Amino acid sequence: MGLVIKGGHLIDPAHGVDGIKDLYIDDKGFVAGVGKAPAGFKANKTIEAQGKIVCPGLVDLRARLREPGLEHKATIESEVHAAVAAGITTLCCPPDTHPVIDTPAMAQMIQSRAWRFGLAFIHPLGALTQGLEGRLLTDMEALDEAGCIGLTNALAPINDTLVMRRALEYAATLDLTVFLHAEDPWLRNSGCVHEGEIGTRLGLPGIPEAAETVGVARDLALIEQTGCRAHFCNLSSSRAVAMIAEAIQRGLPVSADVTAHHLHLTEHDIGDFNTLCHVRPPLRATQDRKGLRKALKSGVIGAICSDHQPHEPDAKLAPFAQSEPGISALETLLPLTLKLVDEKLLTLPEAIALLTHKPAQIIGVDTGHLGVGATADICLFDPEMRWVLTEDIIVSRGHNTPFLGWEFRGRVTHTLIGGKLVYELGKNYR
Image (cartoon, rainbow, N blue to C red; front, side):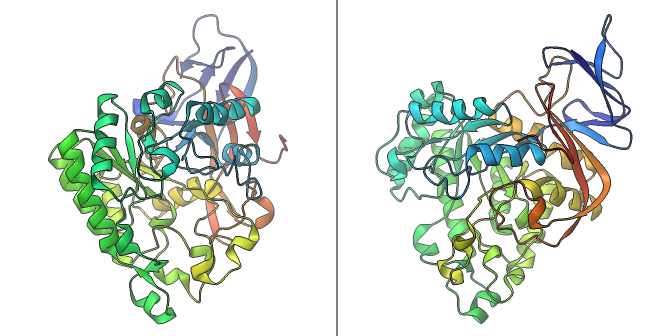
């Protein structure tokens, strides 16, 4: 059955497309034509897209699905439904599950579970060290063959610099990307907020900016030594992105991302111990947010991700320092990015590029674009629809977000995976 998406404003930054164009999808789920139907094409179904933006499905570089091991928080099934409701068709799963994704069997299990539901594609990241303990290296070649698109130790630090060097050397021989959460564990200590005026006023232990910059400096030195391709995750400080900019200028094979919430929130949003703003790395000063936005505009930061971490309600009810960090963020990834367009920081094609083909390039996956022959993973959204985020419309099992009550402009109306309609606003696909 052929499908035509008719009359929509097609934005495909990878191919420089930005205009009103029909999109034709063949019966195998691939893009058959852009703007003009191929010879002999017959459409059995039409999606009327007038007034809507048609773009590639979003690519999220970091989303914790909580399965296996933490199913009381969320499951793969619950979170892939949330992903497609947010227009996300591809996402990366860090290895800090229980058990850890440090064997081919675990990587294959994650992927087979995702295939069972036929919704968003899940690409696992393999562990750099066994059990994420920072001592013994994993069999990176086996993890690569099992479908891991990169390697990381997630938020668990590798304290031994020699172990880190060996890990980067091993990854470099296989031409694998290492995803780094740069942070000095001794400087972070037991901190839970940015070391600044708000943390001091609230009497909460702080994490200094130096915890991030010292970690970035160490990792950049090892990247230069080993030639390993590396991606810096979750940058939160203006000084850290300046260091990445200088490294890129020197030709080091590095890239970086930022979470959507770090582009909008600062330490001031913690208010009076709002645990929904407890994240890692912490929300930093206003000048850091300005630095992150500047790096996004200049291209130093190549992707915006959700860093989705769903929690059960009890996880956020403890005192701030004892509460669990993280935001349920899949469903605010696109609207928070569109806010940057409303604020004139980015153009709409620039914003979509940061959510589609640019993150796809970082993980080396052929997605995030809609050229002829591409898999028809597609997001449609109404750029003028205004809506308020409330708990009853959150699809994710985790409702832990500081954006409850925020009004957004722009909402996903349709999501297609391989040419198949898997989400339509107002319809229940479970």
